[in-house]
Length: 173
Image 1 (tube, rainbow, N blue to C red):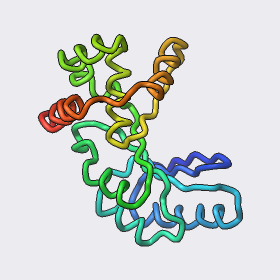
Image 2 (cartoon, rainbow, N blue to C red; image 1 turned 45 degrees about the vertical axis):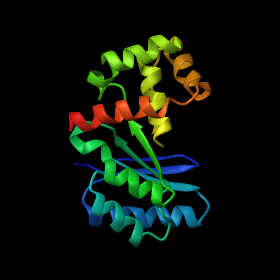
Image 3 (cartoon, rainbow, N blue to C red; image 1 turned 90 degrees about the vertical axis):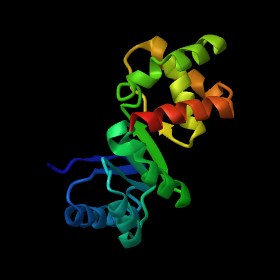
Image 4 (cartoon, helix red, strand yellow; image 1 turned 90 degrees about the horizontal axis):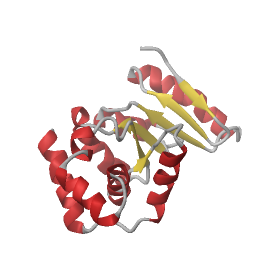
C-alpha cells in the first residue's frame, strides 16, 4: 500500500500503512505542527485498535481525527470509537451510506424517516451524530447537499430508535 496524505492549513490526514512507517511520517507532520503550518493531525484507514492506542501513546502531537469507513467488516470500529471518545479524538466516518444499505433501507429506518418527513439517509446521519460520530458526506447533487446539512437541525432520535439501529448494527457483524 502506498502512503497518501492530505495537507491543508488545518489538518494533516495520513492514511495508515505499516505502523513504523506511519510513525515516521507522523513525526514529520509533528514538525509541521510545531512550525505552525498545520493546526491538527489526523489519520485515516486506521482499523487496528492496538495501533490507535500505540500511536496515541507515541505521538507528541496527538491525533485529532480518526477517519474510517463505518461498516460491519470493521465491527463498526466499536473499540476505536470508544478510545476516541475517551481521548477527545473525533471519529469521522466515510462511505457511511454506501457501506450500510441494508440498515438504511430497512423497514424500521424507512418508518422513522416517514414519521419525520425526511429521507432514510438523513435518519442514518442523525443516528451517527447521536452516537458521537461525525459522518463525512460527499455528493454533487444539490438536493442531497441540502438534505445532508438539514440533519444538523434535526432533533436527535429517541433512545429507542438509537437502540433499534444499534441492534441492527450488532446483528450485521
